[in-house]
Length: 233
Length: 105
Image (cartoon, rainbow over all chains, first blue to last red; front, side):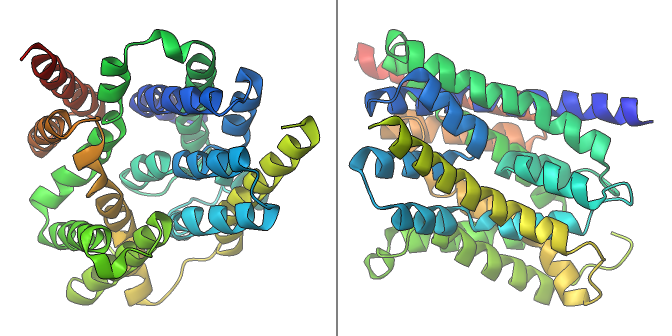
């Protein structure tokens, strides 16, 4: 059973890995541009596994910012993971002992969380381990390639790759939004609020990471209030 | 940047990011009872992804035209229930085509 679940996870990780390869590639180029060696760039990707946090962290590093600023920035940008981990914690099966939770928590990225949550029923350690494997390799490998050889690729191509990750997000949220009014409400509310926070001058001081938390909490609360979920779902 | 400074930065980055992920996942091992909290957590993935996708997707492929065309392609493919790979690559292809056309005219 564990083997089949692991393999199923591996398969579900393929599109994430492809997306990561391209996004990490862009990060690698940026890191090399900031003066980091390919090895230094890869080490960041292997220990952090987070796109927005790494991009922000890189610029702070290059600028020589104080360590407390680095810690605060990561906290604000990545706090959304706490929300995702909390959501995921309610879906794990009995085989997820504390050590496994502590280990697999490392791989709880936006995309892995999205795919894992879209699975029916409880989530086991074999499936989640399989799901994390390839994206991790893609993330580290993409960073290495980007840092070492990014300048060789035409801008036209690297620009186009930037949209890959969002295509993946849309593939996760649109089908359920189409078939269920409750999910549609939540997605539209989150998207509209996020656009308002971005473009309305009054909110220009709100950082990207904090804006995501604000929008997600409001939209999910709206959904829970208007369309409470029954146990069977 | 010397090796020690680099290591300190990476340690702080990685440590903070890991703790944010690990604390809720290891702390909440029991199912929460409140129907509201349960419903709230059920909607969190959709809300998070909705907020992360918009408006960033509109500027995700460089210039406005490729980004918008890529977005339109992604919306259409995803709405029709295509797999993640198809939607992601379709969006990239549409954006690339738009960039090429822009370059030629």
